[in-house]
Length: 260
Image (tube, rainbow, N blue to C red; front, side, top):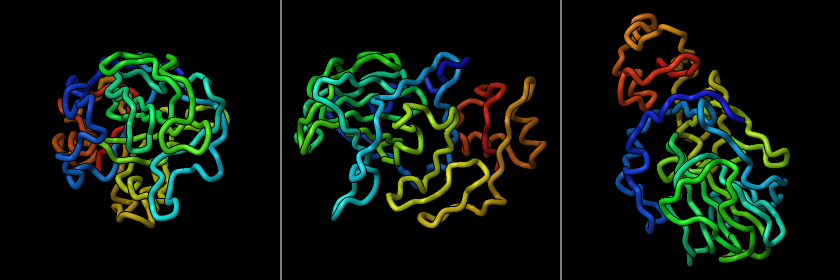
């Protein structure tokens, strides 16, 4: 899973809300201002992917309600000492022992804004602020913290908001489900059953815009945001807001963006 990509668009992704001690440093983020959906490139020009641990998700370890609490990730059974890999390239935001249940925990922030959590490790092999490549061994599987047996607790989060990791990864086969991911705000509702496709914007959880209102466009060579906006009867400012684009020049051929 290696494809061509441009340099990171957001130069401050490893600066804003960067905290090597706070598990969830996004308390000041107003999620109500987040677009209803965000297009996220998972693999592109220098970015690669590696399954954190290949193996089926435990039947009782899936993302979703668990008794009176919410299980914010997936549990992957393993043997103590099995290697755990960085899912994407990124910088380690935390590498610590967490008393809240994670045990030995590594959190990696990736340049597309996602963070991945790796809990219950027997041993951590990376330090905070360290850059890691996809496929690099970051720790060894174990059963530290609130754990009844050796397994990897794996989470995917965006601005601190968890969503089902199985939307991204087929853990049994170790494969990435898609190269470009449409992250919908409704995914943060733990009861959400919203589809993942670009042409499926309906959900029975958090209200989403009508399917007909959401329109996407794949950028072609020579396109500019002003031309795309005029073609679709919208504005450059609106397209930038819908896709989290900070500069109108930050577009590239082949990328899918939301225009309405």
